[in-house]
Length: 290
Length: 218
Image 1 (cartoon, one colour):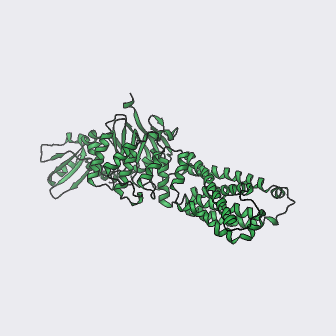
Image 2 (image 1 turned 180 degrees about the horizontal axis):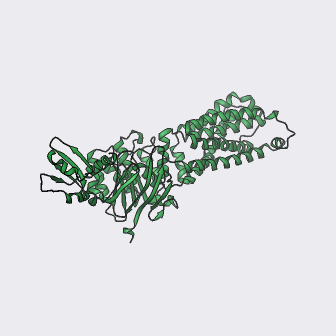
Image 3 (image 1 turned 60 degrees about the horizontal axis):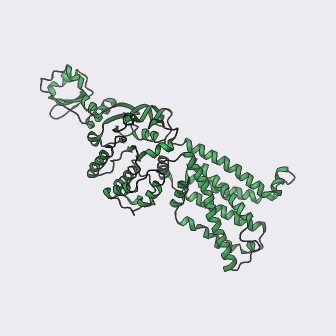
């Protein structure tokens, strides 16, 4: 039952930094699924990813990769992890081709054909030094590397930042192709939350170092509603303590849990809408800051 | 381990491989000392090789600030352990020494047979080989713990300062009291004393570098 096992399990991870703290961060990801890791800037997304990759040491808690304790044999476990970071981490003075030559040596299952296919598909120039690549092209190169050694877990930190909308779509298609293999899983942090709605099976939302939820995307989308109506009806909604309310030129918009609708008279002039993931994150952050 | 060593050589700036050629004009200016041979020329050859090897070690780590952190973010994300990384850095000193030592042989060969400078000692001299190897390791070992603790710039400044202070101190060795057992041992067996001190120093700095690197977040 390899497919149903957790490929990644983060349990009660704490990490204290100078002005920030990850507090009891927990979530898990099963094989065959894509998890979106969302949160505002400074929420702890990159710190969590660095802890998962063993770049930062955790103060307490546990991280399991492929059902193994992550620090027992990190070297072997990393054979199966593809990574993409939000900054260019490659050898800047070397060309794309030479970077590939250095990096490919470390992987037992490096697939040159897959690499060159991706390079061609993403239109990355092989003979250009990495420092001369645009941010988007450098990101494409990082993706090609991550996808070329048959990694079972792909960990990506803001892979769509710096990419144009066309390539962003293309990337999402590539990820959907990758996930056709039920043994693989993708963990994906991003600011472009709209990207996730189409591909992520699970969403983990982190804010101020705390995981707010880790749920199926559909469950998250079903859990909240946006109630719109004229200003005259605002008080009726306010009684039910919505998570956030804002006034517009036409009336008001209240963001609330779907279950709160049961006690609201929805026969009146209310308009009930299903929020997007972006709406959910925006309103949850706003409500937490209140 | 081979991958890490290959990477170090492959990512080294090309100019670094030709830096040892500065030995040629340097030795030209010292042709009197070189002609006489003896302990002084052995010391000059050995410490020149040691210093150039140190330079190559430091140059191969010459990323600074954020770039330095990003480079380690890449390396530590690859299937490589922190211990292996530090071990490879220490092993690389051997390769930088070998490259510089080959250049020394070539330069001495040119001086003797092309520029006809008289030399009383053979080009292949085991004392030069041994002392230059120890001095290369000694200087590079000084660099690494400082580098992992404070970064490239500060490590280089402190390294050069300590090298100057050490050279100054070495010049005053003759003034030391030879009645003392320890001092007399150094004078009686200089190569044994130097190699023992180098081995101890390399071991201590290796453990220190490993400790610092293992504790650092990237």
